[in-house]
Every structure is written in structure tokens, then in C-alpha cells.
Length: 412
Image 1 (cartoon, rainbow, N blue to C red):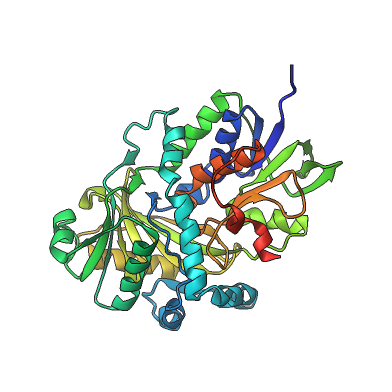
Image 2: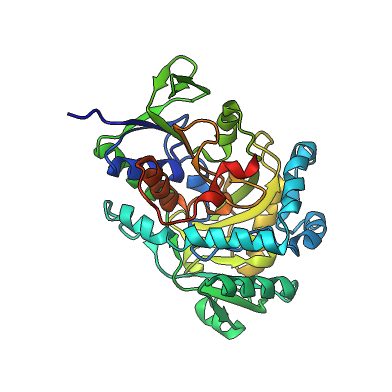
């Protein structure tokens, strides 16, 4: 009997678990590693959106004009931890170089390529589990006020250009969809084919349980280092070593600690995102609503109304910023009346590259190492399709996609 190829996947968030499941489907023997129980980081605390429309990223030419105002406004979507600024300068420099019309269209085109097939890839995995009302197909609504209308127009036109399906909505239509939202809005876009999770962590754990039931292994171990025995990757924790035929690095914002050891200088940093819950208020809205000018949104979930968002640059080690929490509370109260005291203050890390494309595929220097990280705001949406792509690459199957734009080679 042929010996099964052994694959180690580092990271048990949505990326790692989806990679593990698709690899297992191809007949590989898969071991999943994480220093925590599965789904305790960004895969727990995200907005729960399945956003196949979100091709237009932050690297728009007009965004640079908005950044100073965003940083100066205590209510804006952007914040900096000033002690982290020196470390951010290289990332910001690269980001600015990616804010041209040409680069923005390149990002949008290749985000669209994978987003367009993201939901069918999830459906393949969801066939194996009982979702019992954990995913709702009610669409996602974006609304905005009268400011920055030029930016909104630019985004609408770009999405049109690359073929993203969008429904422009009037204030009356917004009111009909979400009557409880205060009528501050000027306009919006409704994506009726988008979905949302009622409990992202619960979905992830169901996928993980299915992986285990099918013979997968999970080790709660902190992988600190890796080297090679011949060409086989060796993963090392404090006390143990594990040898595999191939490995996948899929640990989100923490992936850079390992890729740096592979002499690969991938310019990834983290956008820190926050959430709070208003318990028992999930009935106030029927679907996720994003207030685009303020860079935050609300999702009705089983834990209550989850208010999530803002972008803070401050690395992995800075503490939670209370003013960002306050910002979420005030923003939510600007949109809805009668909210109680909030509960659960949470901070998570979005792994973001300066061109706002993920890293999917082979390591530059080592043929038995694969990557699946850097999905910024779309890690949850792109979990299944990224796992499917990596599993096909490892199995030497054609994907019929142009995968070059996601390769880490673009940074060398």
C-alpha cells in the first residue's frame, strides 16, 4: 500500500481548518497545530460576513487624502499607536506605492478572481456539517452619509468595471430593509447574495470536528521554529520536533514570525480590529449593516448585536485601546436607539499586506512549504477557497486561475 503523504498545517483558524479539510479530501494525512484551541483568534471575533463582493480594497488613490483627517478624528475609522509608528514606516511606504489607479485595479481584479468562487468553496465544506441556522442568506447592507460621496462613486464604478453585482439603494429602500436604523443616511449598496454567520466560532468548530472525525490530528503546541531534514520540513516546539513531507503556514497575523525564519521578507503587518456585543439586541437589524464613512458595522449574532470594526495600526503586543471601544459604542448609538450597556471587549489582528492581496501558494525558497495568510478583512470569506487552491497546488492539480499575483515572489 502506498504511504500517505504527511502534511502539517500551522494555525487552527478558518484558514488552517479549511486548508486541512481540503487536503484531507485529497487523501493526505493532515496534522493541525495551534498554540490555542481552534478558532480563538480572528476566526472567533470577526464580523461574520461572507463578503464575495469586497474586491475594492483600501489602496485607492483617494484614500491618501483622507488619511490625515481619519487619524485626527476621534470618531474616524483609523487610529495609530504612536509607539508603533517607527515600525510601521516601511509598511506605509509600500502601501503608498500601491495607491495608484493601476495598482488598485490590479488588486481589485485578483481579489475578485477568488471572491467570485469563495461561497461555492464553502458550500463544498458545509455539505459535511449540520449548519442548523448558523448561516443566514439575507444579504449585507452598506450605508453612508453625505460626506466623501466622490469616494463612494469611485468604488461603485470600480466594482461595476470588474463585474461585481451590486444594488444601489435609496434612503427609502434602506428604511424598508432596516427600519430601526436612524435616518442619517444619504445612500447605500445592498449585496443581496452575501451571507453572514450567526456564530463564526461555532461554524469553525463544526468544521474542525468533521476534520477530526475523518481521521485528522490536532496538537495544541506552539510551533516556534522550523528547519529541514533533507528537504522535509521539521516543525519545532519548546520540547518536540515533528517531521512532515510538506507544511502549510496559515496562522494569520502570526505567520510572519515563521516566514522570517525562511529568509523571506514578507512585508506583512497587522490591522487591529475590535468588537463589542449588545446582548439581546440582535433583533434590531435583520442583516449586517456597515456604516462606511466610519469604517464599522453591526451583525446580528447569537451572542447579541456584534459591533465590529475600526482599523488600528499598533502591532501584536500593544494593549487594547479603550478609546477604540468607546468609538464603537458611540457609533452604534448614532445608528440605533435604546442600546443597553455593552459586553465583551475584544481585540483581534488582521494580517495585511501593503498591496491588499493575500499570500497563497509556494514559499519562495522551499518547495515543500506553502502559505495561506494575509487576507486582511477577508480571512473569513476566503478561508475555503484559499484552502481549496493550496490543496490543488500540493496535489499538482490545475486550478484554472492566475495564481501569480498571490505569490510571495512579488515582494522579492
